[in-house]
Every structure is written in structure tokens, then in C-alpha cells.
Amino acid sequence: MNTKDRRSFIKDLSILSAAAGLSTLVPFDTLAFAKKEFFTISLAEWSFHKALFAGKMTNLEFPTRSKKEFGIDIVEYVSPFFNKKETDMAYLKELKTLTLNEGIQNHLIMVDGEGQLGDTDEKARLKAIENHYKWVDAAKFLGCKTIRVNAAGIGTAEEVKSAAIDGLGKLSAYGRERQINIIVENHGGYSSDGKWLADIMEQVNSPFCGTLPDFGNFKINADREYDKYQGITDLVPFAKGISAKTFAFDEQGNESTIDYDRMFKIIKDAKWSGIVGIEYEGSTLSEEEGIRKTKILLGRILQKFR
Image 1 (tube, rainbow, N blue to C red):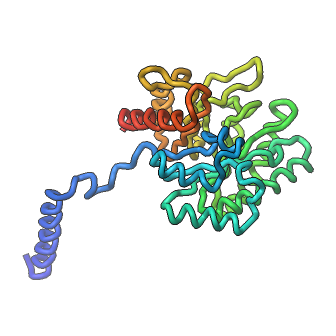
Image 2 (cartoon, one colour; image 1 turned 30 degrees about the horizontal axis):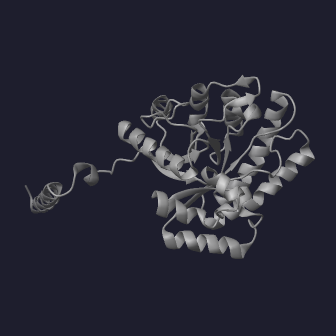
Image 3 (cartoon, helix red, strand yellow; image 1 turned 180 degrees about the vertical axis):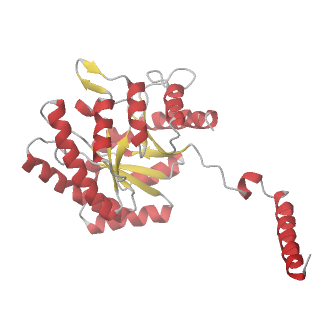
């Protein structure tokens, strides 16, 4: 072994020895790459919709309550609770400062009431697209990654699908410019048909357009409901978030109307990981208790599917 090779060998040996010594202090997973959690938990503001509509709390109070009362530091807003202040920079700065000071992550804004992105009337559809721009801008300012929109319209399934592809495609282009995702929830009508919405995602074909599968929103109309487990299977390949809807719980703390084990097996098998939002919408428990029970349930699911 020549001098150069000897020096290289000694250097490599020193590195290996140091790593071996460190391994007695630090777990192997940490030395390599920390194992990524299956999901992290956020709180959807809709869980407090009764209190918010009744004026018992405000949008500005929501993130602080989420962290201090429930230990959840990732939040999902709902647009009507901004009370038309989404372009008020003083208001947005106050909300941003509050969340920064409290160490709270602004994750997404659920946008409703801004027109139909699947409107078959082109002029009305373009107006709806433009109406969403301000929410993309507000999300960007607040540090969110995403806005949730609706793929709605009046017409045949194929007519609305064609219009929604156009509407979502144009809005996603605006989102791409600002690095904000545009995601669609199964939210009634055609959008609650998992296959229909998945086909739209494939045709829009944008990394800034995806889905927000909701466990409880698969009712297409008064006479037809799409199978919720098939719906999650259809939508999870495009998911940039999951909405963990709860309505009621049994004595063991399981959601009594939705098989959470089955849901999360579908999600896990799809190799999805990300943020799962608590969205309690029941009537038998208080909003606070419903949120707590949902968080406990998700904690059990997380332990089971590690």
C-alpha cells in the first residue's frame, strides 16, 4: 500500500469508527433517514361552523383555539368565515402574525361561494375562475400551500366534466405561477362520483391540481350515493390532503358510520402520506368533544398503520 492509499484508508477508517461510535448514541433510523410519518393531523375550521355562524368565535380566534385547546398546530380555513376580508391586507397581516407567533402552520383555505368552475356557460365560468384568484393570493400571503375548490356545474355529466376540466386547468395555471395547489373535494353533485372526478384529474394533468377526498361527502343526489370506499380508492391517487369526516362514535370511540380502519388501509396501500384534517360534523356531541374524539381516533389509526 503506497502513502496515498494508506492516508485514504486511515481517513475512511476514522469516518467508519466515528459513525460506529455515534450509532451507540443515536438510533439507526435517525442516522439514515428519519421514518416519515404516515400522516400529520390538521384541524378544519368547519368543525366549528356552528360556533362561527352563531358569532361565538371568529376566524382570528380559530387557529389559537386549535393549538391551545386541542394541541393541533396545522389549520384549514373556510372562506365564508373571513367575512369578505380576504383582500384586506391589514386583516391578513393580523392573521399571519398571530399564526407565526403561535407556531401555527396555515395549510389550506376551503373556498365556497365564488361561482361554479364547471359552469357550462363560458363567460360565467371565466368569472368564477377570476373570483378564485384572490383566494390563491390570500393563501400565498398566509403561507398556505393549497386552496380547496368545487367542481360544480349544471348540465349533463359530460358537459360539466368538460367545463370543469377547462375551469380547473385555467385556475391551476394561475396556482402554478404562485406555487399554490388547487384541489377539489367530493362535495355533492357529480363531484361525489369518484370515477367522474378522477377522470377530470387525469385530463387536467397538472401537478398543481389534485383532490381532497372527504370520507363523508359521496351523496350525488337525493336518490344516489357513491360507495365511499370506492370513492376514496378513486381519489387518493390525486390527493393532496384527506378530510377525515366524523359524525358519531360508538362506545369504543370508533366512527359508527364510517369504517376508519378500512379507509386508512386503502390510503396506506396507495402509498399516500400527508396531512389529514379533522372535520367533525356531528350533532350528538359538542364541537369540542367531537374534535377531541376524532383526534383520539386518528391517533389510534396512526399507531396501527405505522
